[in-house]
Structure formats: structure tokens, C-alpha cells
Image 1 (cartoon, rainbow, N blue to C red):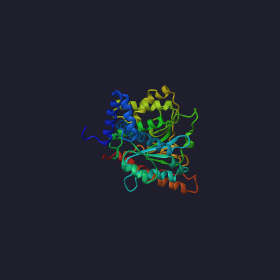
Image 2: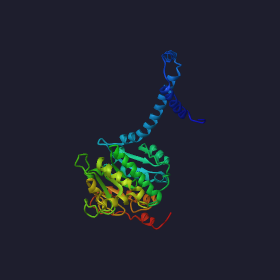
Image 3: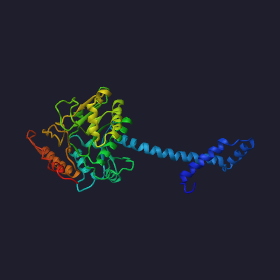
Length: 356
């Protein structure tokens, strides 16, 4: 037992004392001795009991703190209907002259009816650097437990670390649903140019949709499971059906080598998982929820712009900065009928031609 910490020693002492107390026959004389010793505060048996109680309190407090950190973060960011906006970042999102996180927040500040939504945005940080930056910006922040995996570097699209990070994200979001919180998940490379909730037809009635998810390219039918999904933006309602979906989704992790979680969910859709679970699902039109894969042509309708179909953060920052400039130009026009076009996504197009 040499070298045991004070915390470990107290646990050992508790264990030994409990054995002595349970096994030792107690005579009337011993009971009298224990009573007398208690009166002057020196009884070793009751001292042991106090140590055990104190040790148990330390253990319980430690576990409670771990459990409650997420609950506290979700509760503070939650809307009245227990809905939270969640984005996950790492160190790569807070580095550079114009970090991706700052650009992401610019969208909320410059968008229509979006500024107040920052009050319900929970930034989930995968490392200490991004967590510190989040706290510095006075946002709602939560430090993701990554079980020793280092997620602080940029996870280039479809690299092994990128795939690991996507699965860790899925597990975290499943935990959020199990705690009874509905959420909008958004990648941090999405500009929120308008409040999306009016477009999402979202409410908490039993008739509400379970899941509404963005698409890389919209096929014209918002109920068609043939739409190619994009898991970078979706809203999901917490209930038994959606919890089951996320459990089934994450259970595929170890049998899906080389596939990101979005590909796995796409495969599950093809296998009929939505019908199997009785899920009500809507696929979002790129006219409103657009991206670089398929750009919305209508500045008056566009709600979000996602830097998808892009490989690196540097390229995303360059082209999303252009999106912000285009948006400001649109907002400055006195005649809303003037036709504008988005700046070409040159940096993202070129990102596929270069390797790190």
C-alpha cells in the first residue's frame, strides 16, 4: 500500500474498517467502551465512519461534477422549449488572422433576425485552446471529452482523424438527445444569414417533424429519401425515435471503416431506417439552406450558406469571407429587385487540386 494517495488510503481504510465493524463480535463492555470514547471524540470506529463518509462525498462530488457540466451548459444555452444550437470546433477554428469561429459568429451579427440566436448557441470545444477562445468571447462553452484522442489540429476532409472526429460528434449529439434536449446542429463553416426557424416549421407538438436535414443537392422533393444528405446542418427533436436512430447510427461505427458518419447514415436511409423507426423526416431545399455544392440563386430567400464541397479550412475562410462581402453588398442595395450573383468559390475549387 506504500505510495497510495490520501484519497486511495482513505478508501482502503474504509474497506478495512467496514470489515472490522461487520465481523467483530460486539460485547456489552465494548459497546460501553465505544459510547464512552464517543463522548470525548476519540472513538476510532466512528472516526473511520466519518472518513468513509467524507471519502464517499468526494467520489460522489467528482462524478456529479462530470455529469453536471454538460447539463449546465445545455441548460444555460437552451431556449424555453429545450432546444439548443450546437457547433463543434477545435484549435484549427480559432487560429489565424481571421479565424473560422470569428467568421461563423459574423454571420449571426450580420444576418436577419439572427443576433439573438447567439444566446442559444453552445460551442463544443474539442481541445483546451478552442475552449479558452470560446470563454474569452463570452459564449456558452463546453469542453468535449475526447478520451485521449488529439483533435486539436485541422482534420482535413476524409482523413482518418476527420472520420474519428465525426463519430465523436455523433456520440455527443446522441447524449444531448438522451438528456431531453432537441437541437440544431450546425457546422462552424456555415453562415447564418437569416433566422432558419421560420423555414423549419419547427414546434414541439407530437405532430412535429423528427428530423430536418440539409442536402448537398436538392432533387425537388422535400420528402424524397433520394436526396443526398449533408450532416453539417440539421434540426432533430428529442424523442424515443430519434434516440433510437442515433444509437443505431453510432453502432455502425466499428463496421464502417473508411466511411464518415454521413455516408453511413446515407446507407441506413437506403436500407429504410426512417420507415423502420417511424421517423418523420424532411430534406431541406438548397434554395434556402444552400452551400458551395449547390448555391442558392436567390439572395432574398437564402437562409444559410455552407462551405461544403471544400477541403481545407483556409479555403473555406477565403470563400466564406467573399460570401459575407456579397451579403453586405446585397443588404446595402436600395432596390431589392436587383439581381446579384455570388462570388465564385475559387479557393474551395482549388483546395481539391492541392494536397497538404
